[in-house]
Length: 551
View 1: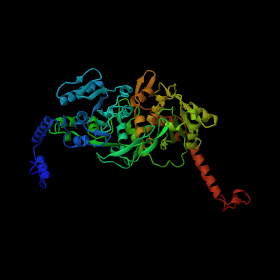
View 2: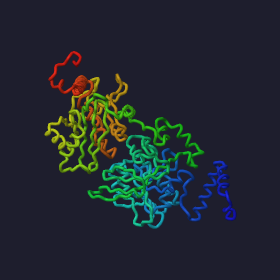
View 3: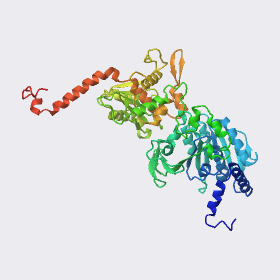
View 4: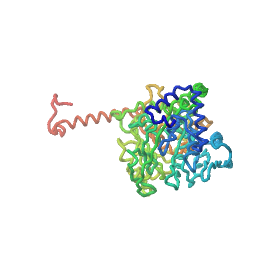
């Protein structure tokens, strides 16, 4: 072979011959090559040619891999752990889902030698080299691994995790040997519910069609996460930024991310078998979601308060400019309580919502939060709009009191208190004000109502997730909407964007009750505008109006 390997076109000829082999022969050749390499002690695991190999050799610090079932996602994480890393942590959201991964690891290892099944399971396959297996069913379970450094962390079926869990554990990616590479791998199918939509945000250059500078599969993009947990995409590895970390300014270097799609067609073990047929026979809508490569809308829950399609339609109706001759009616305010939750402001002009305003929590001086947040609200307020402040968690109290003391029209919203509000048809009542507010906003979004829906929402994917997360159940006391603390616990974050939007609709003027007043305002404004165009002597009454000059 060596005598011919330097001849021109030799590699092309070999590849051409391999490409002409039947799938069965190619698969057998691949298995034979693996056995030879393993017998020589080269590697315990070898990636398949194509996306799996591209992912294996990717230089990204954080890798998203998959998008469809059957693409060899879980095997990638195991292979990297055996071949490239010293201390690995492989997680599934449910502890009971680890059995398949553990079986796969034992198969690669060749025996159960070095495996300790006591929770948490660990497989030690060489001196100082091991794989920890863990579940993180509840938010907070991820903290069991705080301070336990790993140079590889794999979130298998990543969309089942909550974003806060992933970002927390990524903070413990390290190794004392600077030559040992550290990385995070997220092998996953698309999200089936709104809970996993954070993946589309974290990898927006690949998954979000609205991202202005889309990335190609496998392309490295660079990002810095600021003090409030928001990602800032930067130009390259040298584009360091100074950000505030734990109250101090620090220069932070960017890390790299990429997405490499894979499917069952890329997996030689499944491509020629019946697995593809099983996927094609899967019931809708799961088939379209799982085979949609992160581009298909997830399925609504049967008891979801607000349908996702209605929110999307409201976003398609949105235009950049507010409707003419419609004043700002209300402004919903969800105040920050410190920590990482920002202050959110949602201005509403009848059914049209202006882009949501976000003030990072670390920019709010908590010792004078009332005056600061009240000033921010006044800066965005127009037309004597009613300010609706969330008082449910107690964080909005100082802002409410400051606005009230300055004679600003303000209303306090306490979601847990009772309400007499009913559905539009008068048939449904609610266990609390929060449930009524969400349900009435649902009715306002309904595109099938006479005249269609008046709501127009800005294009904001986090807002979509906030509005579509709560569920409900009918009770003898009325419609009971899922408690906010339960929704936030499930999502791993506050639903502040959705809350501000809903509060702004619940209170304040609307066209149905104030359109005549708005018309009068418009007519008066037009009259004043025309008066300003008249000569000064006429405006001041120093010269009588003739018939020709009469308004």
